[in-house]
Image (cartoon, rainbow, N blue to C red):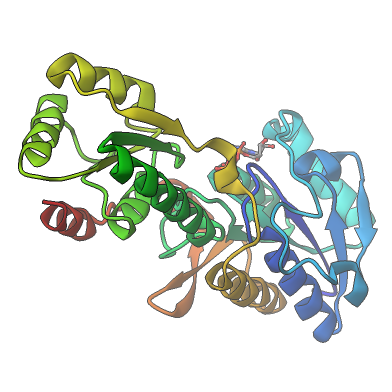
Length: 319
Ligand code: ATP
């Protein structure tokens, strides 16, 4: 491998820039040529690539979003589109590609790998829904944002003896709700991985207020229900009227935490080294502090296991 490219694809996440920086600087360190593809697979098909140097990735490690921008691209879902993508890279003499994104982006990388381009996937999503890595790039920052928001809500809830329902992102994965809920002492955490009973939620809330609790926070993952549905359900059952807050896209913005920057730096450098070894069609991850690669086929066909121990702990501690 003499020349590689890097792209970001799917939803953006904090730390993608730190990952791009790591890929570019590590490639240059090892004497490779490196190109940045603008706007994901769409940019690849449009031949929107530029040569990157050390300064191209200066002053970005602390920025949210992605300087390479991201896009969703229908054309790349077709075999013709994938063929075209591989040709664009070959014409430029590029033999390796690092794709930073979620599982859809991984599948695209896998297709290119089968067409002879050496590819590596990096888990760039706030959702933490990618298996074979403990955390995805952006998850830590996103959880911090939710915790910070809940702290603020708690101040005002306590003064008014109110309850609050907070809807958080994560798509089909409950990890943002679980981690943020545990870290902020939420009374109830509702996630898609665990069936919930609104009667129980409402009863618990009523009992807790009866026994002197002055506030109550319910965190609900968007994959389980909307905040609106939970709020309405509680009012119907016990007459209390929780305030509903939908945090939305602020969860995807802002400066990445040091954890996300370090994870992105380690994974970005690792992906480059794996490409240099000739590895392809793999996703990079970090499991218990160890850098690992796993076949993309396996990654996209496995559901990330849910951490029931952490969920049960949150339950025990939220009496
Ligand atoms: P996030 O989970 O953060 O939204 P994602 O990578 O899962 O990220 P997708 O929209 O699913 O986001 O995928 C991004 C892009 O990857 C798609 O727009 C498409 O161009 C490409 N892609 C997705 N699935 C495939 C596939 N099966 N084959 C080829 N390319 C694909």
